[in-house]
Image 1 (cartoon, rainbow, N blue to C red):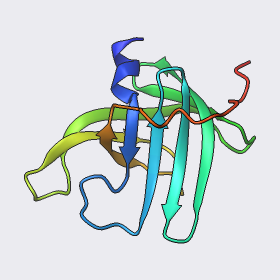
Image 2: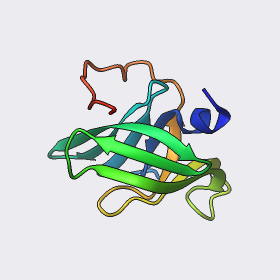
Image 3: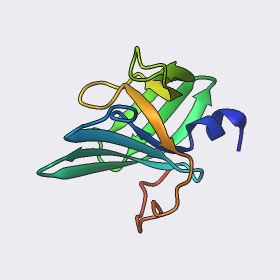
Amino acid sequence: MSLDEYELIGIWSAGAGYYATFSDRVMVFKPDGIGRVEFRTVYSNSIDYFRWKIVAPGVLELTGDRPSFHYSAVSYIVSEKERPPGTDEWMMVLQIALPDPYPSMLGLVSRDLTGWQEPYSPPSSG
């Protein structure tokens, strides 16, 4: 695994660092190239599974199990940022250029993926 790949591995949340959220958008990047994006609300949850790979420095390809979830040349940056702004609290943040309704800025919740190894048959990679 390259350093670029390692910086993405983990659980990322749009609500990370904020104190009270009634909904959240979460992205999980696993070292085996499988990931997921979750939309969590008080009333319902939805999940999109995908395969991910770095195609160039700072550029991802995401291929989902639905034909409408395929994004190539997705730019991203991982850096430390104050979150929320003005709090003097710092965390790793993933900025990712996905269209709405997908999240564009997420804070790192954990690099430990224990409990996120759900049974799943990912989309084929070729």
